[in-house]
Image (cartoon, rainbow over all chains, first blue to last red; front, side, top):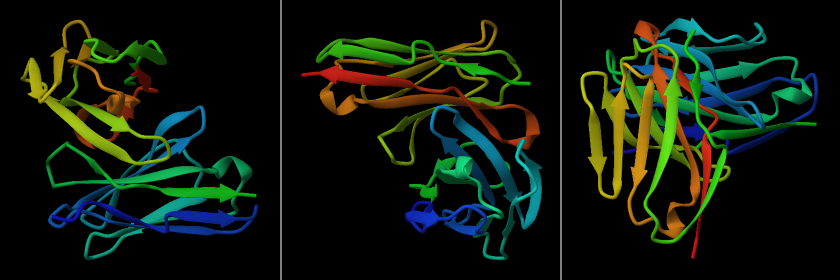
Length: 112
Length: 112
């Protein structure tokens, strides 16, 4: 069974640009979670999508947004990139009504 | 608000030693607790999930315990090996929103 996949592996952008990160959950999983792991700050919850709806949002500005598609894959968009957005972005998935989360390998975003 | 703490931040032990990694949380109303392993620059690998109704879980050389009343979980690693060197994170979801609150992790180094 394939695990959670994320693309791209690495992304380099300049300040002010937009970044789009993608995540494909494990087959049969309906929930997708996004987390940010910035150096020195630990893992912070960003967004949770389930059945195409945004269910919860962490303490991040509105320029962090996303969506979940009918096939349950998800996109994270970060607009007006700032230097401090440089981080490892991790996606996780879980089956509906189940709390164990399975993580992908992450996308390393570097903002210069 | 749930807070998860892992102390110390780093640990160095000689190969073969049995060791215990600690995790504490402030809100005992957790649904479960997960332990993860993270290698440098990589995603998270789920090691063990303990449901709130359980006291412990075992997988190979790993044993995790959960004491909700004291707000503590421990990860026991038997006969440590250099390949166990990694960062170990604990995380707990609070309530029905399913987001995980992470500790900052313990970076373990096992010396040959």
